[in-house]
Image 1: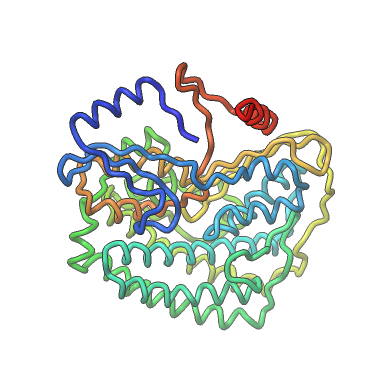
Image 2: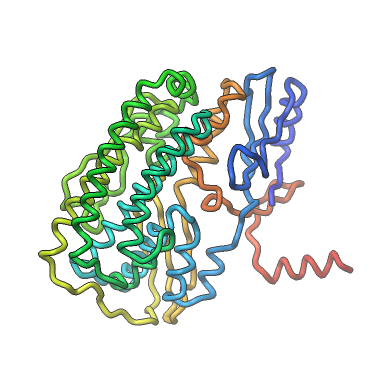
Length: 407
């Protein structure tokens, strides 16, 4: 639900007086998820944008507070279909931080491997969507054909292509057998060659350059001011990556580097992800070569009830910094869960800056360039339209409000 303060209403009226508004969404062919951008136009030039969320709100945090710690692994995994693994692993890391335990070395390598496979899956999907939004369907089909190799590897490792159910509290659910390692290395070699082709394509193709270079500028100063995260921040020259800044699992022991571009535009955001694919392939090779020499233990036993305390866990999702906060109360259910996804800050704060003074025809590629996930973004806040006061309400309040209105 979305309310507006007096200042917001005044601003909207002034914009409507000077321009005309065009609603994009919540159902729109530009993007499959339900989003709403209220775009103010002067001719074909975008003057301002209001980003409205709340169409996909599912109450995930409240849902997790009503289930036990083990059940919540599967709830976290369904927050996002593309980043399912990073959500469940960050949640498990948060619970392990509550308990103050470490997991076996082999489990750390397996978790790292699955996360980098998921990063490949996400980045290839992104490149295909960018090609589609530019109008190059052939690029979309080529990239998604190559993405199938990543999905095959995820299926080899976990038995599934989307929700892998690999992590559990204290480690991982299943081991990676040595006999599949050669075929995975072979697929990585193929993907590296294909990524080199896409690197040249996104740097040299005249159509892609015309539609992305200098389009959707996000200055470095705004990235730092608004705390933008992930590839969006790195494309504007900000060197920020949780894997390097606060190493977790095995990232601190592996050889890789943070990709930073200084273009600040849509092309830079695309190139960051293209070049990150090479880094993910390198990390995966190192993990696969290390696995055969490690002890076979993959899980540490953990209690179901957790003493009263609190903890956080931070990991680098394909779209940026992902934060989980948990408070325990001595039972097998959390007292409080809080999840901060990268798309929330990247969409809400960066889109109005990127779209301002741009052409309406460039809106789809600019939105696509930040790789938004609206199912991760949606929150619900009630705002008193008279006072502007923001309220957080519980189920009892909503039920009482409904009964009052029905009378």
